[in-house]
Image (cartoon, rainbow, N blue to C red; front, side, top):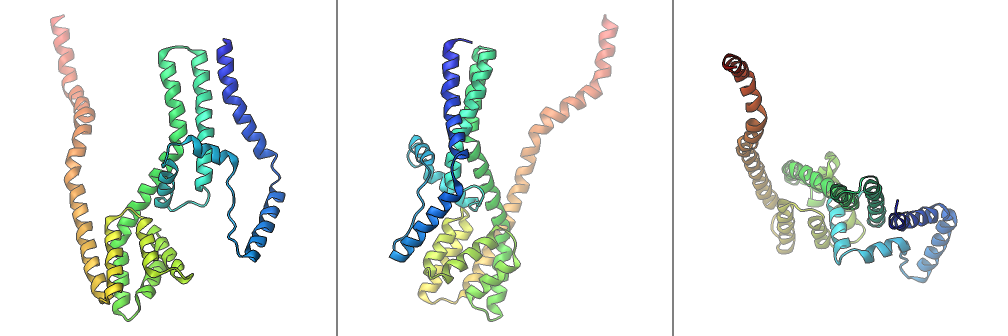
Length: 292
């Protein structure tokens, strides 16, 4: 290989080696003990202790465009903020994957230096860099779809509980305890926010901010207005549950209407050609044989 290729490979490998060495040589137990001592000292002094991010995370944030970290945090909120993949780890993993993809692209280019190899190498680098974003975004979409399916049934459970004599928060707790999906987890988190002293309106607004469902946001606004003006919560739940059921039926009808259009292209490009080959193939062979 040429010296330029070796130089590019060294530029990619050296940061990876340094990052791996810094992770392996860090004294985790001493770091945890120091942070615990500092946290206890700040707690005694009445100062909120915040954990400083790793230098690599700060460097990765500086290399990102403005507002991109906030967008990643929003996608993580829609995905339910997985405990195994916080924002700092996501920001730290992206450059490592990008450098790995660049290394693979350089190896591909060095073995076959053609314009197609250069394009494939760039695609591998970009794909590896944005792979965590795609995974988080896909997880968030699936989670919101699951919440959309659970929403009408949850409202029905809350309406039955309120009409049976329970309060709104008790009905929310009962619906969250009987449910096992992401919407039940969000309701349980809202109740925990209220129990630790957060105002009800802020807790409800945070529930709407953690979701992208228009129905859930409309429900939260209706609950806030009912709490502010003293409107009966049973009436609000009855109207919202009816609208959610109508919306679910309309969504099902819309998907049923889109199904023939979605089936048309596989039918034209996959099924009809094979059918024509099976039906007309022997006749075409006979014609060719007769005229030859």
